[in-house]
Every structure is written in C-alpha cells, then in structure tokens.
Length: 267
Image 1 (cartoon, rainbow, N blue to C red):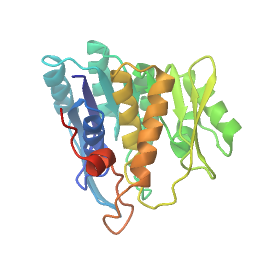
Image 2: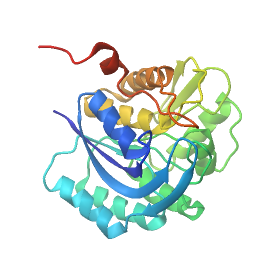
Image 3: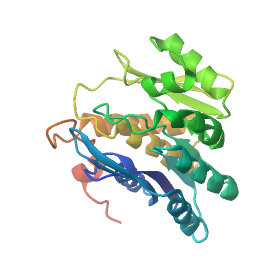
Image 4: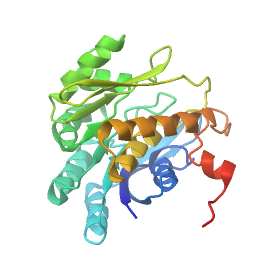
C-alpha cells in the first residue's frame, strides 16, 4: 500500500485541512498520515481562531514519520507563518521525499486569512523550490506572482512567472474565474488545460485541499503529472457535484461518493 503524508492545518469541522486530505487519501486506497501545523477553530461559516504548532514540534512529527515509514507522496497545505515554513523546508530537504504537492493556502472559503502576509516571501524562497507541483487558485497566484489575473492568458503568464521560482510544475486553478472551471498547468515546456463544468453549489468547503491531496495521491500511485491532475480533477468535480449541505455556510465536499453509493466491494 502506498503511503501519503499531509502537512497542513486541522479543520475541526472536517471539511478542509488534514481531515479532507486523509479522507481523500483513503478514497484513493492509500494509507494517510498527518503532520499538524496549525489548529484551526472553524466551521462552514467562519474561522473563530488559529493556534500554530511550534516549529520544533512540527519537525518532531516529521521525524516520527520518516524514521519509521516510507513516504510515497506529500501534500503541503496551510503554513501560516515564516518559522513553520522554514522548519518544514529544513526537514524535507533532509529527507528528500518525492511527489511534494504544495497547496499555498492563504484564505479560508469565507475569506478569512490563513497565512501571514509577511510569510509570502518565505513561501517563495523556501517552500516553492522543494515542490514538485504547486496548486494556487487565482487569488493565491496573484499574490505569489505579484500580478493581476483576469483571463486565461494571465493565468498562463502567472504560471510562467511562478515556474521561475524553482517548481517544475505550476497548476493555476480557475475556480475563481467565470464560466467552466479551467485549470492551467505549465510543466516547464508547455501548457496543459483541464476543463470541467462548473457545479452550481455553495458547498465547496475544502475543495482546494481535496484537489491537491488527490493530485498527491495519484502521483504516489505512479501516474505522470498530466494524468494525475486529470484524475484528480474528475475526483474533485464529483465530490463537489455530490457535496453535503451541512452547516449554515459553505458545506463540505463528498470525499466518499462512490463508497456511499456502491458500498464496499466484495472479494
């Protein structure tokens, strides 16, 4: 069995963060592990509070995993401050795992900030260079690339700019644009496009976490980057299409739609 690690914040409401990542890993038949970077008190409507885990404890969690268990892929999510970014980069440079997917989480679905503005330079200098693929949405890509994104050409330009920061694969997600949900991948040589119908629902809590952890899952399973993203796009679209109307705000996606519909396979 392949083993995948989530390094991210904890969402007590279960829709995003490491909870979404672990559900996604399980849905792909993988063994999921986690390193908690922040404890976030949030629900479908708001973020109530954030308490960051100390860098030393983050590094000890990473040591605990790597000294004992082989890691086939990593999804990095919420990193709220510079110290934690540096701590994680140090350890991953030490262990040199493959298939690192970075989802640069900057905002909650309701717009609440989840990353210190002063940490963006550290994200660029320490985290992006160790990633195999980075998956910013349009607002995140605007921050990282320091430019405005209004259309598909701008998404391509942003991907080109971010690729110069040391990450070989840059996926700009189009969920914040209008029309069909089109994502743009630049792999250092050419562009690929991933298009799915936009689902008319407010229940999209944790979609970015789910998408990036699905990409990490497929990379760990051995799929090349374009196929890994294609499969992940299909998975997250289904999860959104059959999302749950839970809570008073943006409900969570349905990570186990196939399991809920068809049950456990026999034999």
